[in-house]
Image 1 (tube, helix red, strand yellow):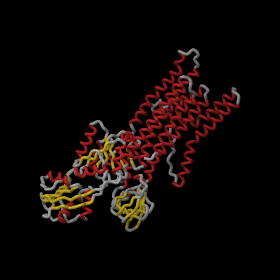
Image 2: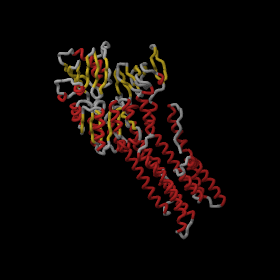
Image 3: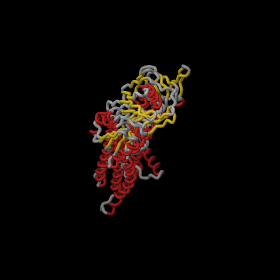
Image 4: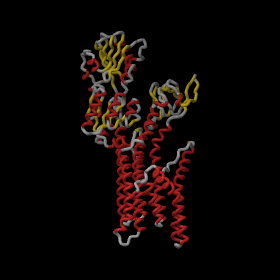
Length: 640
């Protein structure tokens, strides 16, 4: 039965009024039923029992039953047509119709009334749980202002091409990913990151769809098509998230399919079997007990509250800038034993700066730097960006031939018939280039250079550790999670960063396949692993891990698509937060399971023994469902 309000195209100013009307419409059938039920109870006490009033009672209580009962009976018939006979709607239908058959009209109406109220509260709770997720859908404007021939024109966002210039006024949302052309601009990024603090961007920096311009008129050069923007990908992930069911949820659904027909069979046994063993057998009494049994055993508290718990967890995470691709990953993170992290872009800012250039005086330093700068223009690695910033714009007159990237090592090309090698010292070893430097004596990230089969020297580059990286590791240890850092960077740099942050294990000089092997070694010990990365070369190990976590701001599209969880603002402290949300979600789900089974078991025994009435049955079913719903919604109010 779907009590959820239908979506409408109501103007934003009337949204609150529309919500009030919608909630009133949801409760209207239950309100009519409640008024008629109370009127019937008053009538039972004030009027004598005669043949005439018996018929009046039947008509009166039938009128009270129909507003809340008809939707349930329709759902029961719809499920029967699909072959799903033993649904919760079927249980409620036969229990309440049975109550009418033995003259227990108020109980029959009350059961259906409270069940319907529970369903309305469920719809409201699910709507609330989805609100944090659905709010993302409103972050992309349909139209943008594009500058053409120095004139601003309103254009559909999906029609804007790469390279076009968007003009963004204060208070407007950016419709596509791009590069800021204005000198500086402040943006509200809360829709993407969950952070309300303004983020100041400078000329040349990347700005993303969904960001809100805060202060001055800004211009943005479009770099990504509308359908390929980060926000479009995020929305696709979120919309698919609820289709990925957690193991607990899948188990309960399977359990309900087996449990419900067993319950119906037991109810029939309770009604008929005593005929053979009880001396003063009264059919109506035992039918009443079996009907109580049916109402109590309805699995709606479980069927409602468990998915709602996962909805709540996904909603709470997305409001904090963490996107789970399904409830199953909430469960997986709740019990994770190891978090393996990449270094660059995950624990460090990925913003490199050249520290020093140490070249052999026999070479022309300016000339070699120009060659290195042109070769690095073929790479999108942050190291290449640092070299561009240090050297300047690449010389267009330099012609490279046979350029290739050697995974995990660096770049190779030919200039004027001579080989140019730029990468780590493993690249020098691979091509047999002798050098008189001990790479382990250099703390910084080192770029070795060889030209014409001779070692030229090296460039040192330093990265900055993220401000919250140390706190992230502390929180992970507090959650009893072991930490490991894997990086393609040189071992001395990796060990230095690991010591600064207190990471348990760290390994450097790794190729992508080495990272895969390290994660496989941890999994071979029977322990679960979450891997956090951002680069294209991290995609294989992200896919291998039990939970792959991608840094969504700097992260490559390949890694984001492969990952199970996406952190939108690249802040590592969201990793322990994601684990805490997973733990709290799982805790609430199991609290609801325990509550539902515990109360139902007690009242089932009392009902079968004739010690519980239909009113206790209503509490065991609808009351427990309402308590479970309130408990599930609680996760959205928690502070992580």
